[in-house]
Image (tube, rainbow, N blue to C red):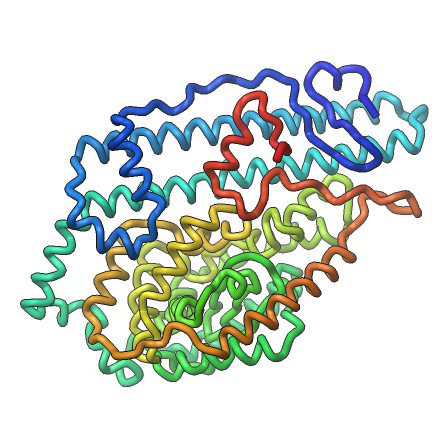
Length: 495
């Protein structure tokens, strides 16, 4: 169906049955593409390094001898690339919003004369456009900054690590590292990281109850074997930590790559994190990091009354959208529930103890706990790097909402690992983890099938359902690939 009137002047949505493709015929505000301030050979060399894992860069950086001029030139290129991508995505979002307004205006203009089939088509188009705008907004506000922050952090590593490495060696030689805060790792379980952990249990219980009542918590994963496995690993780490409260572990059926801990020992692991982890040391590193927030009482320290009210108010708004299924909120609902945001992503995660300093503290303690339990403490760095470098997409977005990319964090983590006594045969992989992954693969298919059946319909009263909104990019696409799809006059849905 080709739309008449004003819709023909500024792009349109072409329907073939209910198959939708977004076609953009409007001219966008042009933004200058990024320059190449470096010689191609220097640019290519640094660009290649930026694609390598942090773990490799820590080993390589001291011997690279990259010039300050070349590194500054790459920073300029990264900054221009981010501006170019962000501007194009925001311009595309404006087009989606304009097209949405035009279709709403057409419904209003036709009034009682509109045919039901035409109303249905326009509603479906509105739903599609709102979903597209939600995806574009998320890209501009969250995913693009995360990807380019990661590049900047790696440039900083190439620049600063050689000198930091020399300082690290001097601290080890002089044993000055032993005086660092929480440097007595051999006393884990017999030292006091923070007093009165037990006072947080009631706060955590209240927070869990409120989040569940406000429908801001994804459902539990319906697989006892997977739940038991994750709980077993977590409890093993808890016994080798400074945690003084019982640990309650729940796996949530959400494809977000994330985990979070509420005050008092309530640890939630989202299904997507299990999918993303490649070995047990990576999972152990994340679990140890999250329970460190509990041991250090980070959630309590940030848990102010006004903040909690804000969180639950936001959750209530989301619940209202879900329960009413109104046309005004349906695109947002799809975005929240089916992979564009993920329900948990909507929370104000200040509740979980998120701050730069607290994250660094949790990195240190988590690495110590994983080490004490017998795991390779590099697992956390490997997981962090993999999500930052290879999962630059919406599913991994919430990980960086709670775990922002900073060079300092990577350095502090690397330093802590270097300070800990080396253990022979540190655990990286286990047969139990591999068995869990097999069960998980089956569970993912089941969960996705059940969620698809529960997708809401835009219209009620027996009318034919609209198709689910299309994604503008694949979950596995890197940000660089996604940015190309949003260049001027390039259809975002073109694959």
